[in-house]
Amino acid sequence: MTLPDLKAKTVEPTDNSKPHKIIIDEKWAGLRLDALLVQLYPDYSRTLISKAIKAGLASIDGVPTKPSALVRIGQSLVFRAPENDQVEPSPDASVELNVIHQDENILVINKQAGLTVHPTHLTSGPTLTGALLALDGEISKVGQADRPGIVHRLDKDTTGVMVIAKNQTSYDFLQRAFADRLVDKRYLAFVRGQLPDQGTIDTPIGRHPTQRHKMLASPEGFREAKTSFRVIRRFPKTQLALVLITLMTGRTHQARVHLASIGAPVLADRVYGRGYGNLVKIHPSLGAHMDRQFLHARKLTIPSPSGDRLTFRAPWPLNFRSLLDELLRLERDDHGEKT
View 1 (cartoon, rainbow, N blue to C red):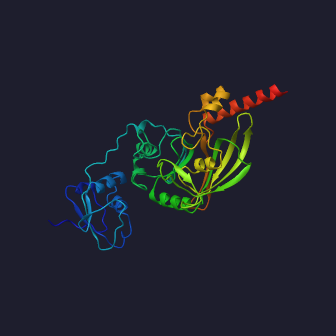
View 2: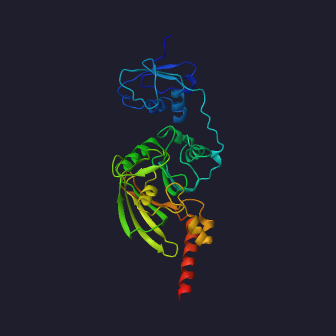
View 3: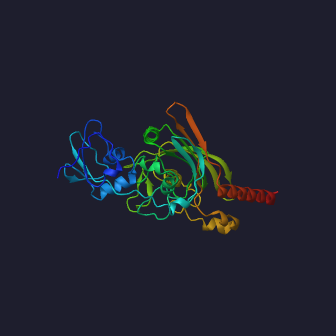
């Protein structure tokens, strides 16, 4: 069967009844296969394109391939476009996003606790990426198919500022900015334990060798990771402290792993922190506040193509404010007893 050539030509969805043969020329050489097909089939999301490739609807020189394959000049790509691109709105459409800023290039949100950024084999339920697609289906064509628009992440129970790219140009620009460390990331955390007034933790981080859901700080064999911190206020009665954190790199769980490595884990961190049962036993009024880890992405500064720097802030979460009020009350009561 002779297939129609689609050399450097955008395909209309009405042509989907038959597979198409695409001859790779210099315009497309070096692109990922999924990125190329999103350009050739602009009415289809990158997520659907990726699923179609994995289902065997694409082959290069007669061999089935994967979405991340890089295409080369002269290769023959055969692809049968999927029949539809329906995004199921439930349950992600029910997720209400707290938008801080939005323009034609970026969306900046204050991510709520309990929301996973993108689906993994370990997660279920609504995700941020699902909510983004329900909000704006065009984001599906930006970035990686399984995490459209996402240029950085926050842990499921971490709140605060996140920026999402709304088009491929912004995605590429922001990815380079994060990779080149041109982004300023500031976090707030309540921590337990003794730590100096300020300091820098410069210990590589990598995947834990036996507990695969965890990361590990170790001087050898891992990727560079650097975190600085400054104590804003100490609460002697509970041995807690409010800390401002700056991430100079962007490793998974970085702030949590680094703080735990110096004996000052994030409060209520169930993965890297010590149990807080004894703390609550001594101070029962704190028990009502221990619903999740106390880590919040307070401020994010990013470059823009114009050369300006844009800064976005997320207000304190309610549990941060309520815990602070309770800690201040305990300190006042303790001071009153002593006097």
